Length: 135
Image (spheres, rainbow, N blue to C red):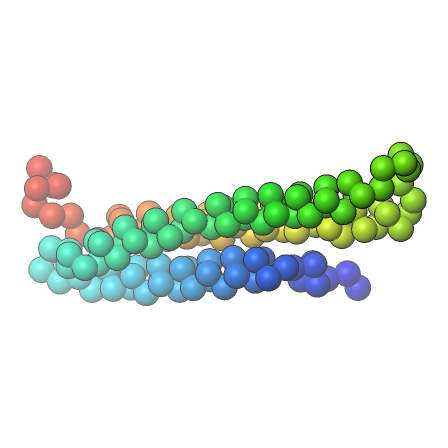
């Protein structure tokens, strides 16, 4: 049986680990925002939310970095064969295997960005607003 995880590169694993860690931190922040007492948000919770949002926005950029890296590797792999214009099946397999990280890193970065942004929006809705923001 084919496993998509077998084609994951180190950057894929870094993106997955980073994104899942951010999801866990967003979930903890969401729980803490429910218990923000006396109607005022704790200043550290608001700043932590901003930092988590900023870090979440790095996920698609990391995916884009993996895409560019895989494309450069793929084109470098096939730039050495100058005389042959027809790809053999073995060359096609090499091409697809070297091109796969271009797709997986982008997808992983985007797949993890969406739930992180949704959780961040929930945190923003659940944190009590300051008096100046409510006016």
